[in-house]
Length: 266
Ligand code: PEP
Image (cartoon, rainbow, N blue to C red; front, side, top):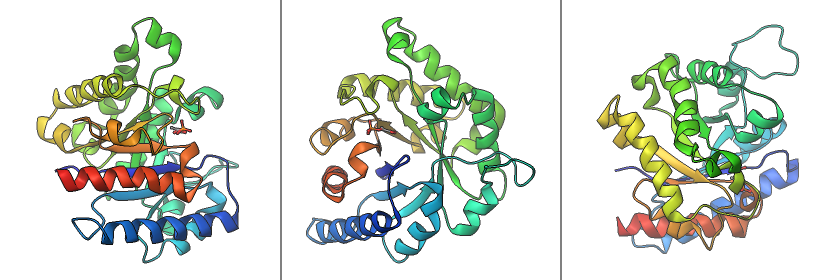
């Protein structure tokens, strides 16, 4: 059984104060919500990804709390002359559990290529695995209009699969984020999202059905408290990657509520 993951991408937002307040506020609320639920315990996982400069503070704030901490990016090299970059061993040393890879803003604004993203992914999953990558894939509006969604998402996925192989995928998370739905307030319908999630899982299953069935595939793109339940109820959607709504305790916890509720019905 796959456990839901509700992940927050804070992007370039926040402060020291907000980092501590958001993590403690989320923790308090979700634990209270869980204690009142049928299961009496948190039935899903929570991740927040603050800006790199706040990661250490976030890891301290999340100690003994039900919140994992992730970075928003990493360099594929373990060390070296790469001014301004951050290496995996540094993130692992801080206590980060996850890292976002290939977010559409990194692809579009910082021109990250499929190959660079695959290199970063390979560094994350190299033995012994140090950090869980969250591989973001998704098509632009033009690509969707041209009917190229599966071609684009398939290409982004294959770039990683072909480099690391299916066995190395099993400890990763995939996030399907249609670019046209990110930060726009326009969400993919549950059916649209499910269709692409099913495509991703089928693509993985061509390599290994068991691994495909076990992998978490998150949906991202204007997820809010009022649409999360319908999205997460789809058979191949295992939680969300949340941008704007991850910056306030109430809105993020509202999305967590959907995960707790659906987990109790499973
Ligand atoms: C994101 O940045 O990954 C994202 C999904 O943003 P938003 O929820 O604001 O659309």
